[in-house]
Length: 391
Length: 64
Image (cartoon, rainbow over the protein chains, first blue to last red):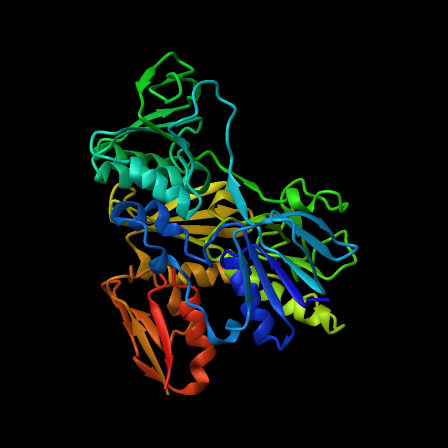
């Protein structure tokens, strides 16, 4: 047995490794990652790193002393696993066994089956993706962004700043409408439009034109857009293929309890980050995955503690999981920050300011405040966060 | 003592660190980060945690 095996070398995997050590686990820890890079910070990939250039050393997370003895096995991801036999098979053919396993393989961008050439169609998740996108973004580039979520909108802002002509095509009624709602989404759209971003909302791309390189996009209403470059930012898919065949429920990521213990296996296995689907005590209802930046840290801490307990034969406990979801975005130097789950609201109220300037927007469900979003009001959100913690 | 260093070129004043160690990190009335540069060893876990949750990864914690 080789101690703890962490599959996935992102933020969640790193935090799980740290938490294993801070919880007293002294055995070997191996972290497997498909990318060649040690854990790095992804949010700058659509903003600062895309604008100023991708610097791997600047994006890398600090390596704490407590994980100095961790073995990093980078460049070959997991392709298969046998949880009952406690083995994981890597893309390079290696088979690693484990005493305890952390599932931390995260998500990848969803791709849509749209006819036409594929050269010039990019996604954005990794350093390699950002480097590729940056190389192709030039003044005058005609960029079509599919999807009006945070990544699509952040790249739109960065690309306009770099001198590109940007068209955003999305089925949604407004940008970022699911987390922000119609009114604030519309106000964010107006900010983008004022900088020259073109929106095609309620629309999809029917096909791409060109031989091998994309030269145009034809929308479902017949609109034709000259296109040099396409960014597909239409959501994500959990990386769970390597877990197939173990009898786990992989319909929506990996199902775990509040201690991050994976359901459906007797082996000591926990899951963290974007793919972990867990019950959240502040936001009842079905277990959910929360793809916010702070959640790999929060789930990683809990999962590392849990796995350390399981590997010494102790009960990880049933403490409810209450970590506050938080997200933030920077578009044209406007700071958008949120706590809670505004996307769950059935009533939205602008409680301070004006959505076209700086503002605070409160999101309510039947139980009360369920989320808050501030634009350029960061220092005033703490009382709302406290109220959310007390739900 | 623990010495805290914040790269103010990186810091975007999101204030996530304040929730982890409000005695060390605070946003002032203008929303700018203010912090205590040296704290006692018993605050180590809190300031490490504050460094962890910084979206810009602008905080470095030095043990002295």
